[in-house]
Image (cartoon, rainbow, N blue to C red):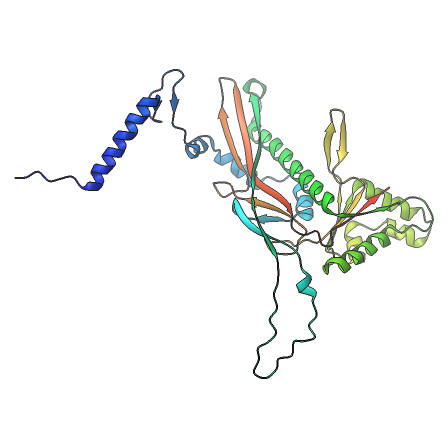
Length: 342
């Protein structure tokens, strides 16, 4: 009886495997499951590394965690979050066609309707892999029960603060600036200055800014200037809360940013400081709407916004890592304004 021949595909696979084994041996590399001698190299597998040190518990903790000062809320107000894949396409808002008026839209018998065209600039982006790591000496936390969550908490606060500074710096640089002085001089009306800037922005873009952010110093100067008028109207305006001022200005919201960051070894600075920022934004923004600034973010490999790793580096040293994917972008400068207050 003749011996059956092995299938061609099996022969090819065996040949490839044999060639690969010879190549590996020739360059001194061993496969991942082989015992290693000192100074030898093995094939690395990023996914296997990630799964080995991925912390399900701390990642779930990061999903439910909220900063006591809710720093992410002011960040989302300045640059609304938009979920995207790692590589994505988005529109740069340029909307003249949206506001054209047509005087020749009447269709003649036998002809088609007037055809219009909307132009937009599409560009591509990639969310950046960002994150922080911290090393802990186990002797320093031996008496603490939830020290892993505590250090994850610290990293998340740093990450969210950096996101705010990054977003505001980007938006502030792109905004059209107007200098204003709010002091005790008679006749000053800070709220009228903001209202006039809203009208001016709408004349430029067609979209009236619907979000106003005051820095801590700017808000303080606003109240000081109103109180200095020594009138019933001045005192009433000085006492307005942010939501009440939003109603007066006819905007979606007014926020006061009181966040600080370490600007030098011995000093902290306000993130928004003496600025009033006026922008257009949509809750639930997408890649193509007219929101001035967006914070594009991509889910980590497990589908969450933040992913936490942990591993013991040596007998006494432990490491915790928090990563995420984020890319802030100015998607429209139309109507983006700021007042710099002195």
